[in-house]
Image 1 (cartoon, helix red, strand yellow):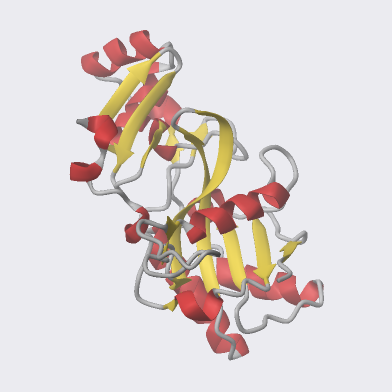
Image 2 (cartoon, rainbow, N blue to C red; image 1 turned 45 degrees about the vertical axis):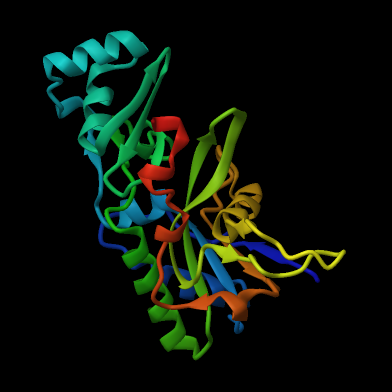
Length: 254
């Protein structure tokens, strides 16, 4: 098995109203890359939010009294904390220099996924409002143009409980089931797997993140080719939801 990753290098700075699918189509043509069946496009969520005009003007926010109290506890700008709370369903934990929330999408992550990097001064980008829908629209556009079966995964950089360092994570997808349930398959010694479920979309997002980088690399889109399980996981209806642990099974919030 050989897995190939291509960082798309000709992606321009994106602004509100831009068609991301069209931009990808034009970039692939410039780089002489033709999409093939089974290709997977990984797209940084900031790109989607910018194109959809999903910005927050931090300086214009008015923090509430409760927000100011939380900001004092976590040592963050009260206006940023106000933005974090507006994008959340609930606060999970607050500590020195961190706020962990459940976002409106159901993700548990730091700062509601609000990103202040690679965006103009005074602005921040929250997660796309509906990453699955965004992924589906891009996939359908490119499949119609190329007559190839592909998948699209929207990625974000997130921290992990009990581990240091950020990692690429999937927050939306279309064309592939994000969770590979391998229960019932046999291991090398013929024993049936009893609990194995693989967060495939997250693993692909993490691989793509190696090329995307976290600073000034300027590679917000990565093409992955050669993922052998693509046909097995092909799914045009299921979005990212299978990766979200139901609250009743979340032992860390009980």
